[in-house]
Picture 1 (cartoon, rainbow, N blue to C red):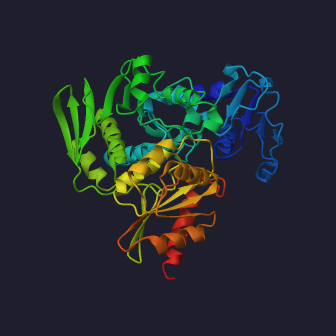
Picture 2: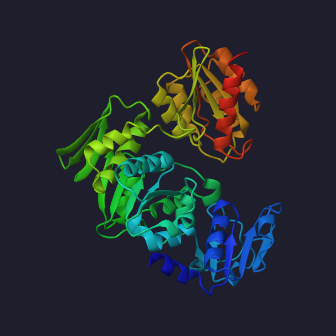
Picture 3: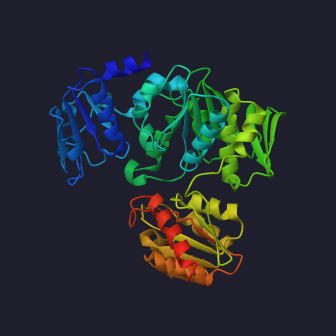
Length: 461
């Protein structure tokens, strides 16, 4: 029934797909599966976008180039891809015309969706929840920002299916529905080039719970600077579970050393001893684990099943990923780190970083918190790269936070050679850039892969 209702929204509408990347192509293919002769318009700002695969579609019009987003009010439905920003528009778009895969999916499948958002940790937490659930039940799907568009799985869903959905702020920005199970991990400055202000970014994130109802479930970080205030101000009708290091009324989870405990008010109701768990190092990952356990407990997964699944979860690439030990030096790839807080968390997690690689594309993020951390926790060797690295280096100079050894370069072979030369035996090298990658790379994955390849190839030199 949900699929039929979704299709009714699209049928007989004048539709434009805005942005023709992975999700845009998914939207096109979904519509074509169900409406093969519907007139469609695809619009993308990339003049060199390769659309040869769609040349045979006589009912498709393709608009490319700088004016791709003109006259959008001429359409009944605007399917906005997550990366598309309306910042440059000089005219008003009626909000009821704007939709997305995420908005429609949550409208018709919200009761089956576990949505996870946060500036950092959402991929790990979503993957961990999926891993635990998949060990205990069938018919579980992982989709959303983690790589599988929602429209790619809708035909496979039954009423018994569960969908673990990683949700970015871009996906949540124009949504008017929330998942029945929501996780809000943290909030830091990020994507300010898209949202124009930190407040707009925060408002997008709160859509993870803004439309929840009584009987829904919200799991959130009680230690976060912003989130408890949002929850109190918005007063969601849903049941809640708070996680962190503090005591809270009602249901909450706390971590201390290797113990994760769940409390109902002051009474311990569940305990997970993770002393042997090494796959997700650091306090920030214990927060991810607490959020995942809270969801799985709510869904009725037994204690031992959760523990068994936890011990087989290996983590994700580019997230404090152990690259290997070469010449007696341990190398870690945390290329996913695009904000200062994530770099700080990675350094804390590894406890004893000798060489740190910082920098990349500069999006105007405030790096003061990182500079303050480096002053209090000096790192012997730092390689700075890209415009963001240059700004961090200047801040270090101005504020007395300079490392004993440093280089500034965009040559990653030189960076890796510096790491080998300056890091002592039994030392630790960490790539945790605190900046986006697209001044040199197409994404953080490519940056991490290049780093790993250079580390292994330099080993023999």
